[in-house]
Amino acid sequence: MVLTTGGVPVFHYSVTGQRKLDELLSGFLSAITSFATELGEKSVQALSFGGSEILYEQAGTNHLSILLVDTGGPVRLFRAVLKDLSRKFVQRFALHLNTDIHIEDIYRPFVQEVKRALDFYDRVHTNISSISPFAVPSVNLSALSLHMTSVNLLEEYHREFGSIGERLLENIDGKTTIRELSQTLGLEVNEIVEAIEYLAVWGVVKIMKKCPLLRESDTRFEVYLNIIGIPNKDFQILNKARPLCNGSRSIEEISERIGVTAERLCEVFDRLGNMVKYNLMDVISMTSSTVQ
Image 1 (tube, helix red, strand yellow):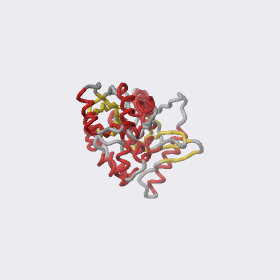
Image 2 (spheres, rainbow, N blue to C red):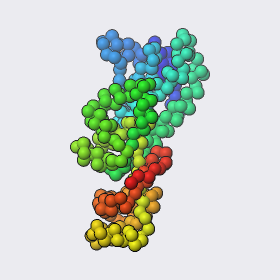
Image 3 (tube, rainbow, N blue to C red):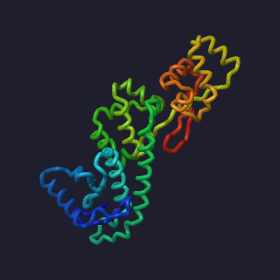
């Protein structure tokens, strides 16, 4: 919902189709914000009401953006979604927001933008919440540059994740897996995943599945295996995995198919060095690229 600081509703959308934020509540929320300002607080971040939570975001100078969510959800991510929608709303309707009279029909087309944002959030959350430590995060430099110049994303990100978030962003290189980042930075995997998911909602970070690509067995490949002296147990795993390593199946999928852990399969691939390549599949858009 978007409302004026005086409590006048400007825009409203509900995924259930039922209006849960009316004029009376709008006035109350506006009064809370004014009260917080008088106490020297920059703004109200959130209010909790039993099973619901209301998140606030200042939209321009004279408006508020509000998101009503279920208590217990990923609040950090909801805030990222709210901030993104608030910024886009102000950019799109700047001229109308500066007038004294607000006609809701003018803002109604923004419903499609809200639906698109929530759909994207759902896909990000679904894919990343089930992602494995062997996925590879990659920074979208153009998106990062855009957000750094248009909104203070990094300030919000650092406020949410502190030095952990800063160290993580500095070490994402599009090649290193979440597991390797965890080991390098001394962070828990779930800490890294939460920060990455936050950035992914903004489009700043993409999550890539590593899909191994192995050449068909030939004399050169067999000679190479003899040279590196691959142990018999590793050779058996390799033989089972090789037919599945066509660049479209992830490490996790292959390991599950042949009955070994992803960690064990990676150990075998590591022995092969440059003889194994990887397609990196974007788990959101399903585009791919190949790396050594």
